[in-house]
Length: 101
Image (cartoon, rainbow, N blue to C red; front, side):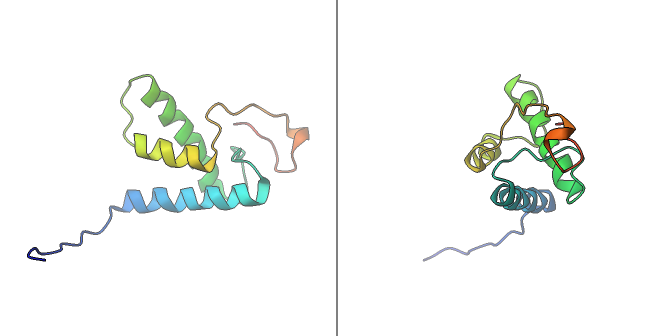
């Protein structure tokens, strides 16, 4: 075609973000929602990541600096069905040890 194709590896942080997104999709398939409890013992990294996405989303929407949230990521999370303002459920409503979202 008259030009050289240069393949660049994706940054590690992007690959980790996509991995967590895939884990969120799997969580939703099993639990029918994206409300990962903050203390979700089955996947503590996912729990922390979901909480962090919500924090970064709030910063982004408030016009403050967000190092990791972009419009593209917001669109992907919306497509999955994340609830940006998750409700605080009482631990008795779950068998996961509490929903302190």
